[in-house]
Image (cartoon, rainbow, N blue to C red; front, side, top):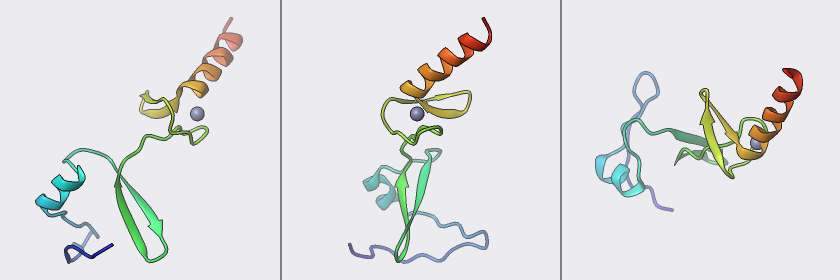
Length: 85
Ligand SMILES: [Zn+2]
């Protein structure tokens, strides 16, 4: 992996991704990103939705502002139906 660009962090530790690099990697304004700690730094990746309950990335949707997988949603639905019957 080559270092493609050199940038300085802003006072708030932000960095602007060059337009050509952002476009090449699919980074668009307003999209979520994941910061992944790696041995020698931080890896910036497009956000992958992850279930907040089990950590799955399969069939994840955002409900009431939280990411949840279909399996956990079904379990919660059953628990709610049991508690409110
Ligand atoms: Zn889940």
